[in-house]
Image 1 (tube, rainbow, N blue to C red):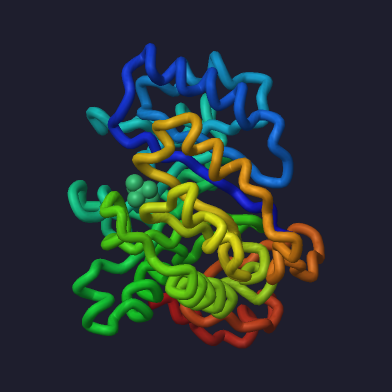
Image 2 (spheres, rainbow, N blue to C red):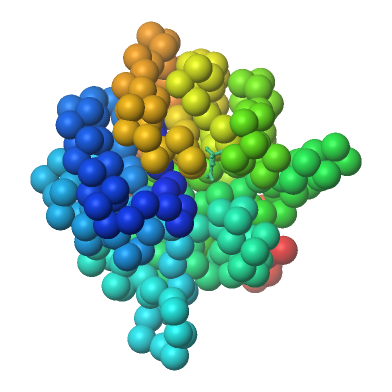
Length: 290
Ligand code: PEP
């Protein structure tokens, strides 16, 4: 069974006092809301401020990015071991990082591996641009980002992916419930194909892009959608809380009754094969890792 997760990405907003006030308000408003995991991702410099307010609450802390190495000459970067001292989650591969800071699929892959290695929980973002959608390339782009980002990753159960169509981020033009469900279904099938069927069932896939209190119900009514990554509107405590507090549809999670067989490990490859790993090795066949 997948636990829904709602995360707020504060981006480069707030100051120390507003970050503190926002955390206090969220603690008041949603700490006691059950059935959904709640995560806030402030800027690096306010993580300790947020932590001091949220410690002891059920609201988890996340960072917005991570470098793939610790203790290296990487001016301005923050390594996974440092982050793991402060936060549980980390956003990786957000479209703003892909578009403006050179985060290729390979970089995303390094960051995902490093984060998992340090005990962090990545929220790996994927999504197509408007031009790609209009050219009917959504599937191709999502598959490329998944194969690149998850290449040779030992995927833990409950791994989090955010489907964020770039054209919906910060534009006020959200995808429709159907569009989100279709893309997230595709992502789930690709994760199953790459990492094994149990992983496809257990991966939590959020929708992100202009989610507001008026449309979150539409997303949550979709069987494939495991809640949301919220950007700009997560800066408003009432608005973020309204999303987190939404009563989940009574049949939810419709597609989430995964046949849980306990923690499983599965290294993701371009083409998953159900043959046990030892047999695969003995067969001498080389794995495809496109
Ligand atoms: C985001 O940047 O991750 C996001 C979803 O932004 P917004 O909710 O503002 O569209």
